[in-house]
Length: 506
Image (cartoon, rainbow, N blue to C red):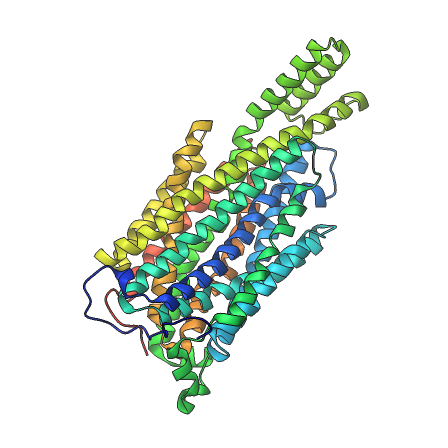
């Protein structure tokens, strides 16, 4: 067993009454660690994209004379890039979900990790919007395939009593990938502020290529689950492994797939079309205070050095920035002064964006593990209902009411707790809806076809941003409008089965 003393056992119910983790042997823990790292790095990649997106758009889009129009263009094309990434994610989920059932969970996981790691690194070489979007599409192919095979692997290997908790833990650990991305963003924000690096977003994507090393561990140590091996060697079933035709031929699996798709769309659209724009909202909220602070420091420094002309130039540049003067052109000398201050402002804004991401994911960690614990007590469906309502209320509150710096430290973690708890629910619930020979396919269909629909979310937000373009707070109006999507999940819950305490379908 490649250095493991304990042979992996299939997830059969036991009569044990102690803590769930006492039923796990060394191989169970190894599988959980590998699957968790795969998803952690997957989420690291996603979050690096979210945090690097504004800076990447500013570098890659053609400059406009109107500063306000350029800022709106950065927001809108950021939505386009997000939609393209989600389409790649959905496509990869469909392709690799089937492969996960046909060639095995471990082999497919290896392929997906290599794809998303290498294409993340290639994103650093982008020279314009469209090649950047192409790299994000290819990255999405790998990202989309990893989730379904990872949760199918864990669900099939773990003892029955440990399954819910380990799947919730797999999702909760992914928050550390997001937090790591936030720390990387903060670090590069400081470096940009100190003028140590230019285009730090490119270096963030270079770091995103590192997870490819995990593929070496997967290739050497990871085995296919016994349930999958049995299904793959059953001649009566082999031809149906990973078949969408088979998924939709059976009325039971077809119903689960279609209703699960709607359930996933609600959370995925809410997160990607609203929740992941919270760092952008923070940068908007903090922009004027930071501009005032930075220019105040620079003016005080110039006065101390008795540079009267520079003081007046800095004051003019500050007033221009605070006014957001549409269509105005700065005199060359003032534009030059502004160019020296912009990296400091952008660096600090990046730090606040990274801090916001950390706050979301601190809340997410507790929300995702909490979903597993609560769903074991009251059931999957009631827990989903609570989570959807909480996500709607908390998201509307953040986008509608967040004004002060201090609110980042309590409103944003609550929102992260509520929004991301849903994704632990998907990891726990979707594998429980499908049999072994269709588990990866069915899970991928629910979680990833939903992303084709979810890809329209940022496009709708882009349209709302254009609609509210005359408003100074267009991102707020768009976010509050879009967060109603969390209520859609409530509509299908009555028609789905309750799976708490039941074995996986065979």
